[in-house]
Length: 254
Image 1 (cartoon, rainbow, N blue to C red):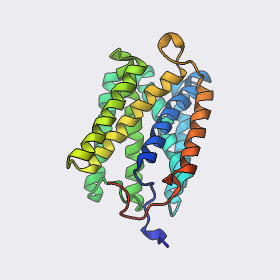
Image 2: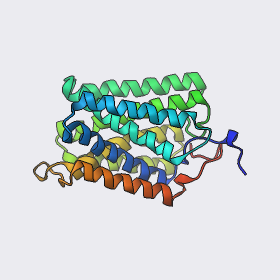
Image 3: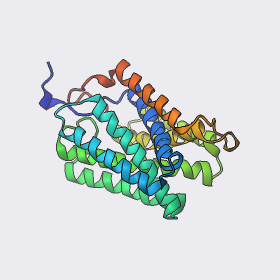
Image 4: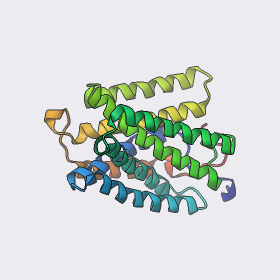
């Protein structure tokens, strides 16, 4: 029997983890757009709504004494939805544009990781059990998911790759990181965060493929319907894979 005090509060980094993460980021895109666009609340109001959801989800996760898959993935989805609306607000309403917003957000991610490293001595995700480490973990995830939204829109819109082209580019970069993982000795923590950041723009472009009109290169499936389908898929991932199993300290990939 595993002692709860010796347990990390995040799932192991497995193939199932990455599948669920991509589904969560795609859900964040469709869900964020459903509230800000389909419900016509605007980016600022949608950001306020999702920020409240994120704070509530984070409180449940941080105060829990052990890993709970529903809590964990609730926070992941919350970071992707609020990250979507924050990015869209900066890009469009505030008028920063995709390149500048992406640069600023990249700086925020680096600041989070650097502060985390100097404060705790590590940015590894193998052991997320201490309160301070967990706060750094979720702050970095929120920043990275916001950055990923801006990157996805920048490549698809500003650079003319389109949604399918953007998805292929980001999917290819993730595949390259996977190859590097197996054939080099580059620190696994660096590769993890690189892949983690890239799953967000991949999810953003996949979400746009699902929901954008046919004339814009999408499938026009509807944001609310797509969000519900993605939520059901995530639930199946959690129920049917080892994402539901707590990971003992030191056994998670890093």
